[in-house]
Image 1 (spheres, rainbow, N blue to C red):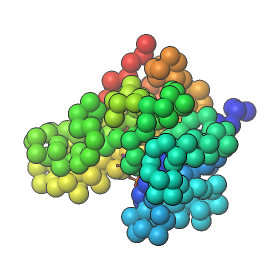
Image 2 (image 1 turned 60 degrees about the vertical axis):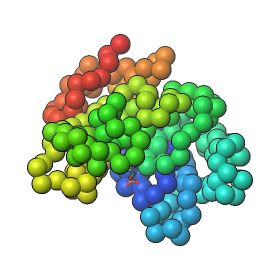
Image 3 (image 1 turned 90 degrees about the vertical axis):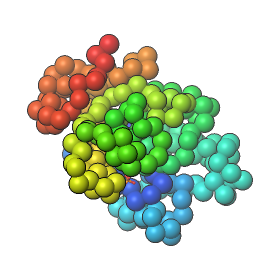
Length: 227
Ligand code: GRF
């Protein structure tokens, strides 16, 4: 049997990507050892942490305001929680904070993010709106390794969605989110089955895994660097 991969998930909001990771983990050699949020659970847009608590997961809410701001107190507490849970990887799932270089360095090559654009296009916020303003024909989502620069780390996997002529930011966001919900579990599964490895700051895929991915998700973009 594969070794259990220990995963921490960081969220700020509704946590739909987190829910997909949790669902996928049930059929994988993966243990979700921590879900941490940086927003109050009673904020309506931050329902993800309530969902995780109801699902019986080990949850922590670490509000920057309780630590005199985000850096360094809140991040230190977050890092300690992650280390205490002995997580092998940290999946950011709508975690809206920009992590410090110190935090990223502490978990070097272990932090993974999903971003709703075809990086390097549209780093940061309002990605769907910006794609529409540019009359982009295609949009998508990217799973990447986290480095200190925002939305800039090596790409692990991308998927593409078409932009429709009658799209607004909401319709494009929901089509992109549906793609994110497929991409992130695929990356988790590949890591758990050692079909994907992170070596020297680079994602290394097994060719067999890539073949499987293309079958499962034909719209995947072949931007993966095989090293
Ligand atoms: C997703 O679009 C993710 O790519 C971005 O923030 C959004 C989070 O949505 N980083 P959810 O909380 O996972 O539903």
